Length: 365
Image (cartoon, rainbow, N blue to C red; front, side, top):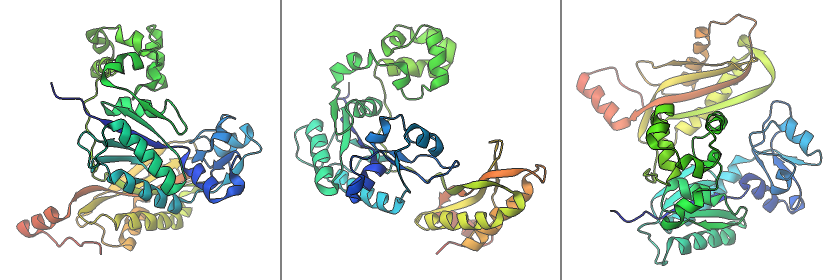
């Protein structure tokens, strides 16, 4: 059998809120909520002082304000957050090239064959946390385990500013008392279905034969059985191909379709700016996303013969896609988004163009 992998999951503690508290000493010790005020806004992050009142990320900002009237609301500044994230990733790169970012504030690292001379994955995790504190003034929690899903659960065990190590021989005992909702992919619906079978903890899930779980839940049932045993063969992927680049916005007031064009053009600017960083791949498909006042989500897309070669072309196609929305004229929309998808290798696309003598594909500068 192959030797177990050595995986670290690093998760910055209340990242956006912690950056704000670091940069503004008057916010330290205060219940900070990173969000725009307003009934349409959602919480991007909450400091631990705010979390004591039940405030959580992705919660409507209006609800957060009701839960914690004394909260200090700070509008998000993603430029600063991205800059700190780059500092943290540079620290990761000292130890391994196998880094899989999940977001600005968390990542998986495979340190089975590390670049550094530290004696163990635990020592590497401790070094990373110390370097993050020294380099950014922020804290991070980490989980060390033989696979990704165990490492992610472990990183949440001793937050904030904590470290949890799960050795291979400890995996079964570590998982046994946890609620099944801690397993990846087990949301509220699946948790309810499992509780209906008398399954509330991982130990109770483990008692069910794999065949019985598969009979009830299909292939997902077998995956549940594997997770209950601490089995996860998913590798750390150092880079993920872009699936879609998009920008979206929720309006302060619902708008009719004929009022959306300036917003679509504004969002197209953000999407195009992100696309300029894609040096090796072309996006062939333009996507328009809409959400109605009733929270119905619609998407319309177009793959033109020639990929959009400028911001103006992207905006024009996105605006034209409104004609494909067959809803009453008085429909109101609360959200709009503009995206690019259908990514293909740039060189391959150009080679195919030459081979089949198709119209020239214009490449964004």
